[in-house]
Length: 404
Image 1: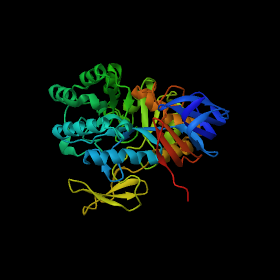
Image 2: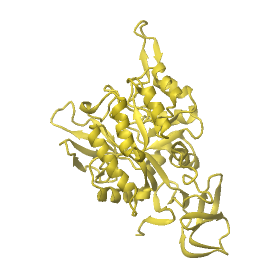
Image 3: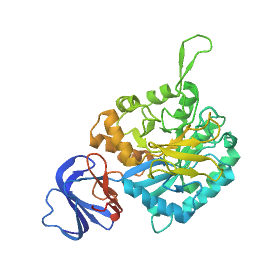
Image 4: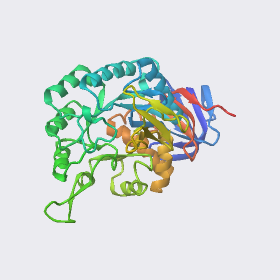
């Protein structure tokens, strides 16, 4: 057998099993063969992974930026470079997330991101866009500016989707807002994933959109209220969004791989109560991710944030605002390592939360998300602690850690 690139000498985590020591052969950007004995394989190029672990490349389905790159503010050239930066952390597919702004700004961003996606360089790393806001609850807006939040008006939404909506793969909204059943149905009709998030919705409001087709939850346990006290009965709790989401097995959930945003017991809890394939870990990362502790950034609106222990915190003269949590600075490999530790699960189980599970939820599992013959050679070479040594996208080595 002949191939373009041969990875050999390490553990191979395939879609169905693991090989303690084996190989992956790649031809024309696709996985051509997987096995134990590579002695008879002739390869144009070879990579000895030297006892490391070959795994599917990670898919981050919720990220706003990395390093000095913001998907809401950077130009196309900067965003292309940013996509390459993700590969240093084992990521081979990215869903670029927006932040609430005017519809004009969001539509403009969609145009730029669509061009990045279609670029010849690193555009194939960008699978599409996740529109997060402005159709969110004001109480649960998190880092989304209050002045931009709106009710989902049918005409405005159709205008956004019909202009550059083919770049959009998912939309987050709060179910308690008007028109959200219609919005759910319209997104589903266009094969766009309807996502519940930034919400204070009741059980009934949440279930209503689930029955209409909502199939995912944005960063569960962050900027979402799960239960409410019954106004008619003191200390009696009413079911809320969490109950509806956990009762419906068809709805997947994502957790930010950060103990500040998500207290550690929730990782083990979600692993126990949600079906296999319906659990995802994301970064929800912002500009500053991957940069040294203490780095300070100033956004276009003048707000300042500081990288502090894997999260971003506000810098402000107002003591009520200064130090407030504003976002994540976690990378996918660290998020997966934490998931493995916090949920007390195997490396293979943790991997599924960042590879095949998001691929299936996004509908791209036929082409990526696992190591199987015929799929794209989107791979990462890691160790047991999720340190990344090499990353390949469609069989091309885009990152390789320099040896000391």
